[in-house]
Structure formats: C-alpha cells, structure tokens
Image (cartoon, rainbow, N blue to C red; front, side, top):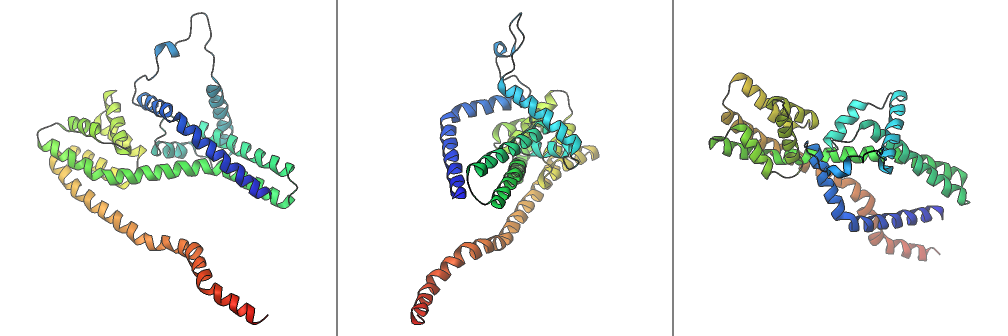
Amino acid sequence: MILVLLIGLVLIAVSFGLFARSLLLPRLRAAGSLRQIDVYGFSGAAVSETAPQQGKLPRLRLKDRLDAFAAGTGSIVSRNVKSVSEENLRRILRGAGFYTMDPLRFVGYQVLGSIGLGLLFVWFAIAGDGNPLLSVVLVVTALLCGWSLPLMYVKRRARSRGERIDLDMPDLIDMLVATVEAGVAFSASLQLAAKRMRGPLGEEIRLALQEQSMGLGLNQALTNMLDRQNTQSVRAFVRSLVQGEQLGVAIGQTLRNLSREMRVLRRQLAEERAQKAPVKLVFPLVLLIFPALFVVTLGPAALRIHSIFQ
C-alpha cells in the first residue's frame, strides 16, 4: 500500500513538474541563451541588474546562498571522501556541456539531494505502518538514488554529446575542405563553420574560437577542445591539424585525408551499433515479449488441463 502511494505521489510530482516546465519554457530558453553568452565571454545581464546601489551592500539571492552552501558541503565531502575526484568530475561536467558548473557545488547538490530524498522516504516510513525491513531498504535506496542519479544523468549527457559530435564531425571537415580550397584561411573557415554548425560540435567550435579571440593560439584552443571532448573523432581532428602544422603539411591535404578517415570512422560506428542491436534486444524479448507470448499460447492449454484434473 505504501509503495503504491509513493508511486502515485511521484507520478503526480512529475506531472506538475512537466506542466510548470511547459509554462516556463520560453523563460528557460532565454536564460539558457544568456548563460551560453556568458560562457563565450560576453555579459548577458544588464549592468543595472548586476551593479549594487550606492551606499548599499549587494543582497544575495536564495539561489546564490544555496550555491554557496552546496559548494561548502561539496568541499567537505571531497576532502573526506577519496573516491570523489574534483578533476574527473570537472572533465565529465565539461563533456556534458556544463561549463560553468563547479564540481564542488555539484557534489554538494548530490549530498543535499540524497539527504532530502532520504528524509522524504523516512517520513513516509514513519507515517505508514509497513514492514520495518522494507522501510529501511526503501530509505537506503532513496539515499543511493539521490547520490547516483545526478551523476548518471551527467555521464549520459556527456556520452550523448560525444556521440553527436562524432556523427557531425565529417560534415564539419567537408565544410572546412570546401572553404579552404576556395582560398579562405583556416581560422576564417572555422568561423564560417561555427556559424552554420548546430548542436554540441558547433558549441565547442565557437568556444574554441572565443578562447582564440581572448589571446590563446589556435592550436592551444583546439587542444582545450580536446580536453573537454576527448572522443575519437575530436582526437583525430585536433592531432591531425596540430601535427600537420608542426610538420609543414598543407592544410587542404590534411583535411582531405582526415575527411576520408572520418567517413570510415562513422561507418565503423554504425556497424558497431548494428552488431550491438541483437544483444540489446535480448532483454526486452525475455522480460516483456516472451512472457506475453507464453500467456497467449500456453494459457488456454493450462486452464484446460487444470479443469480436467479438478
């Protein structure tokens, strides 16, 4: 009974959350655009909103206070728990596209989410009259879910962004080949490609160009992009360009060779996914399709045999 109540409350909370998100979607998109502008080095907020009034101290908003508390909590956890690696977590967050998220603040939110979810299930266990052992198992499961689900979401997003970048990389290289062979400089070709590319690859190229405009060399900006997205296609792209410049190879020939390699790589990735498909279909077949098939085919025979032996 308690489990059914919990499932009902979770579904109601999800429905209210989706309804609120649909109402706030335009504002969320605008806020996301402003955050992306801040990442690229510009200011997305008005000066009058950020500058404190004369004679008054700036008041911290609730979100700022919560972020500061989460950062302090994450710092304490990272010092006492050896399995929490700040550098590894920063790499995962950058790969997922959360450039401005501090790893310690993320760990603090993990702790707060775990404690909040655990207290919620403790309250349900105290309110209900269920099995104490089941209540303890549910509370422990809630604590583990509150800690691991945010990290699982970030890792899944980083993996999805990496796959999208590997899929879009051949198109980027073809665009660079066309513009470079037309007589455009490589930096200008990257700028043209960044304006046309959408998705994670376009964001990474624009961020690399923004780093270049702030004083870094192009090779260093591309190396930083490799640190953020260490996928197979980005690794081949950056290393080919850097080595080609160091050895004095023509950029057009380097890009043409790289374009052929990227096409072969994308074909290999497609073949790998096709080979994994039968293995992934085993679990839905065994858990969902086969039981229903057995019920339909063997159910009438089992009922007839049961009626005969009665």
